[in-house]
Image (cartoon, rainbow, N blue to C red; front, top):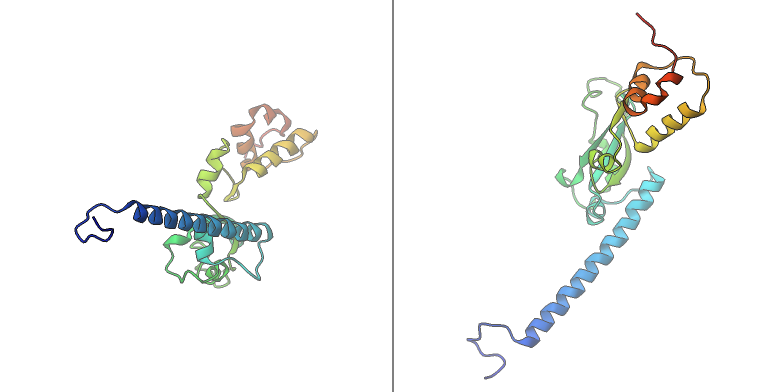
Length: 189
């Protein structure tokens, strides 16, 4: 039976080997592109440069489609999935800042420009829940596990605490009730 028989329904061994080699080459190329894109995103996350930023395509290829945004006007942070934005894939992530305005500050005539704080693989809630620490907010801004740990260490190192914000008192009560005795007594209004 000839190799190029027109009625053959199953592929030949040579065809299968060529297809497998092509699939492996494509998989290797995709993995190399992902690693290169991830290096670019990690560099930008470390520098947080306003002069350059990765492209939307680079962020998606790297597997980091969640863009964290901080509003200096109302001191809040949010994350958006850049895969849902209708922008050209070669547009830089930094160019998105022009179209992003805080929904709480938008009404003010002098609303500040938001600050892009990083690209991540998962949204903030998923990142924080993996650390097994609860999500806490201070003055409307979510605290990272590192910030919570810093607050705990500061409270443990201080001997005399003069005054404490009610939000800090609540954070201490929820996370480290044994440290409540270091805080000054609550003031009655």
